[in-house]
Length: 256
Length: 300
Image (cartoon, rainbow over all chains, first blue to last red; front, side, top):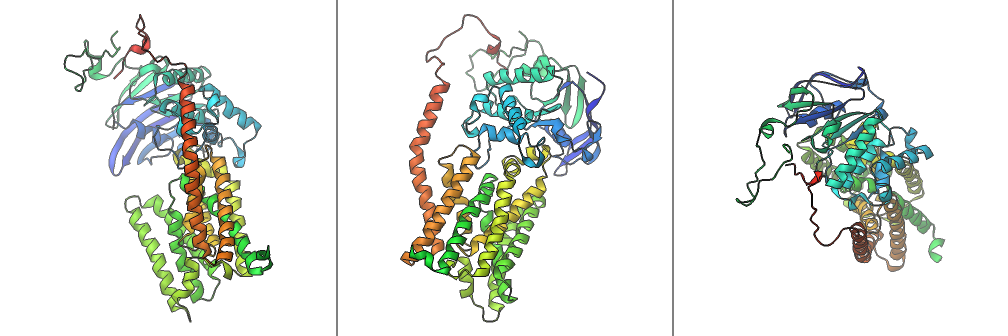
C-alpha cells in the first residue's frame, strides 16, 4: 500500500431533488486499499459512490480520481464499476459474452474489439466462473450469476480501481463465495477497491478500512467495526416478528 | 416476373427492401432502451414537415427529414432536462406536430388532407425517382450508424450509467440514436406511412426475440423478417390490389404470432433442459450434516 490516493473526496456535498444527501464528506482511498462504505438505507453511501463516477452532481467540495480532478478525468479504463444490480434487463435478449464485452469498450478504439480484447473478456468470465455460460442469455441467469456477469464486465478492462455498489445484495451463498474469491484475487494483484456494503458479511476479512455514513456525514473512518450499534451488544439476537412465538431466535453468528 | 417490368414497381420494391432493413435495425435499439413508441412520436412530428414541404413547394421527404430530426433532438433534450413533466411535454410535441401538419397542408395552394393521406398510410406506387434517391441516401446513413456503432449503441442502450463510466460519449450516442430513428421514419414514410412506421421498427424485433438468445441473432433475424414482410407485402398489394402499408404491417404481426406459437414449446424445452442440467447434482432428499459449517450462520 502506498500513500498515493486513488479516490479523494474533500467536503463533498450533494443534493437529490433539493434534499441534502451528502453534507460534507471526506474520504480517501489509497492505492491497494480495500475500503468499505457502510451505513443504513438513506445514509448517502450509494450517492457518495455515484458522485465519484460522475452520476450525481456535486454542489460543493472536490473530487479527485488518480490525482486528477474528476471533471477532467478521462482515463476511464483504469476504473471498473459494478452498479447495484437491478432486476430490469434490457428489452432485447443479450448473451453473457455480449454484456461482458461492453465492459471492454473503454480499452477499444472506435468500438472495434481485437483478439486481445476477446481474450480479456474470456479471462474476466473465467475469473467469476461463468466461462461455460458465455453463450447463454443473461435473462436466464439467477441473481447471483447475474451479479457475477456484472463483475466480469467491470473486470474486462483490467481496471486498477474497482467500485462496487452492494455486490452481495440478493446473491446466493455459492455465488457469494465465488465473489469473495474473485475479489481476493483482485486485491492480491494490487487492485484498489471501494465497496458499498449493507453489512460486512463474507467480505469482512478482505476489508482494510471501513467508513460509516449516517445522514450524509462520516461517522467512523478506521478499522472495520465488528458489528454496528445494537447488533454488537452482548446477547443480541435477531428475532423476527413474523416467526412463530415459540421459535428459536435466529443465531446471527456475530457472537459465536 | 412481369412485376419487375414496370419502373414504378422496381422503385417500390427497392424502397420496400430498404425500409425492411433500416426500420428493425434502429428499432432494436429503441426496444432495448424501452422506447418502443418513440418511432410513433417522431412519425407524428414528421407530419409538420410534410405539410411545410407542400406549403413551401419543397420536397416533402427532405422537409419531413429536417423537421423530424429537430423533433427527435427536442425529445432527447426533454428526456435529459424535463424529468418530472417529461411525458406531458412529449405529448404536446406529438400532437402539436400532427396538428401543424394538417394546418400547413390546408394552407398550401391546392393542398387538402387527401395529399396527407399518402404520407400517413404510405403510397408505394407513387414513389418517384427523386424519392428513391433520397431514400437510398438516408438508408445508407441508417445502416452505417446501426452497424458501425453497434457495440457503442448496445452498451448505451443496455446500461446507460455503466456506458458513461466506460467513457463512452453517452449524450452524443443518445442524440445519434434519436436522429437515426427520425431519418428511418422518413425513409419508411412513403412505404408504410407515418402512422404505421413504428410497427415496422418494433414488431420484427419482438418476433425475432421469440427465437433468439443473443443481441446479434435478434438483429439479424429481425432484419430478415423486415425484408421478408416488406417484399411480401409489396408483391401482395400488386396482385391483390390492397394497400401495401397495411398489408406489410399485418404480415409483420402475423410473423410475430406464428413465431410465438412455434417458439413457446421450444423455450419450454430449453428451460427444462437447463434446469435439469443445473440441478443434476442436487440430491432430491434432505441430508442433515453432522456438524455445523460456516455457511449455516444466518446473517440477518
